[in-house]
Image 1 (cartoon, helix red, strand yellow):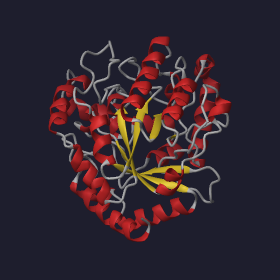
Image 2 (image 1 turned 30 degrees about the vertical axis):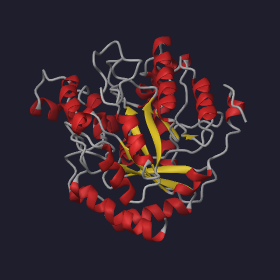
Image 3 (image 1 turned 90 degrees about the vertical axis):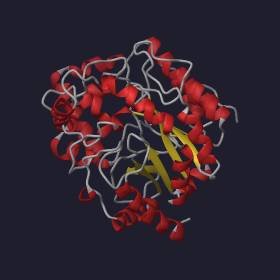
Length: 385
């Protein structure tokens, strides 16, 4: 069928058989944050949110890729680390020249070989994280930060390399958040919902990126994060994608927070939202609303007690970060046996495992992670693939 820009039409899109059968995918976030590679260790994101609350989560986030936000929070572990390691005058943007040098030497074929060896059926690769740095030389560049993009098209090069190994290629893209356009740090759930750019300019910026990426690599998955810009044309983008890639699929993080979100700053409402958010995370929800179309939902470091009617994709790593965290030692990683158990639990309940693989700044996979991935992949290829 031909898809038109309307939610009713989009909901008729069927879950592709290849995705339903895939079982194992890999999520790769690689960016400027891979250089400082810092986050506190010891707890998963969900453990902090459900046990301590949203403010504690953002203050002590285990996600190293959130480094730019974390160093803006007064006296946070990341801010203290940054001041001690790099100095107060060293800005996050100052990592860019170093990272661009790493990109020049990056070899996508090595990643493709690794993904094939561990039995991955698809990969979701970060084209733009919340810091706004583009991993391809887009025609639509950020006018607020000069050179805030990779001159090498890592998106297209990786897509070509993995598809040569018969691995599907998906794109991760931060829709609602872009810290190149905002300055205020995110400290709780209300900030997360409301601090994204809400201008027509930014909405068009995101729309144009998605159209460009769809045309350039025809991704098998569009994996939007957090939400979609309030002034963006979400339905048009998704319809354009399905018409271009009928066998493609999208995740559940496409909610648009509208003008009424300003009322969330009222103290009693803010408290209620943060409480409700903790409860939602505990139950495995990640932002999907019933009237927003998605092919699958995406809980993070979450486990279900029963079989789920809706296809889900559980994001899980051997460590607790998604971006590379140099603070994580072998003792911070779960065992191969634990990952196998978690994987079996996930696929038995109608899910896929999206395994987190966190490259170092130079593009290499940490040896500890490689070892566990190869052992896990050997089991998967023997018993599942």
